[in-house]
Amino acid sequence: MASSPDEERRRALVRMRRVRDRIDREYAQPLDVEALARGEHVSAGHLSREFRATYGESPYAYLMTRRIERAMALLRRGDLSVTEVCFAVGGSSLGTFSTRFAELVGMPPSTYRDRARDGAVDLPSCVVKQVSRPVRNREAPLDTVPLA
Image (cartoon, rainbow, N blue to C red; front, top):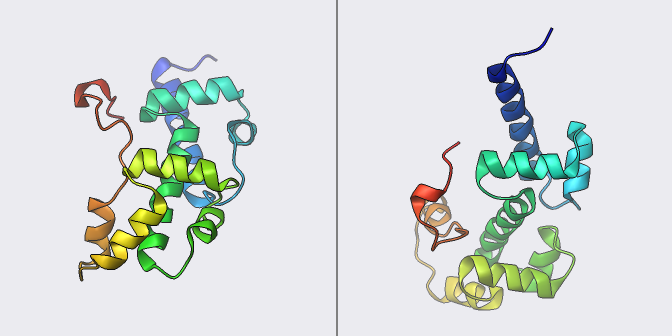
């Protein structure tokens, strides 16, 4: 018996939530699209297309955003070097990590750490996290991002 388009869409959304949850949980582990796709028994290309259609960005971009978000929290603490933070969040190359960090945050990780240390204000961590969350494609108009 064939399933309805609504049922297929529901299954796809459940699959994408599992992938997103796995990325959120295992962000510091070596993850790639092929491994994520194997876990869901789909091809890497299909997973990438489905993830982008659901969340508006590729699985890799989502993973990097999670890693940078966690790196920001570790850098605000100030007790780890940029290299230590890079490897703690799953980076394998300090250069790539620093480049991605600067793209998403607008400054290199060392500058971010220094500014966080110098301008440390006693704000609740939930407020700091919300106002410092990295935002990809800041220049993209809001109406082009799918709301899923």
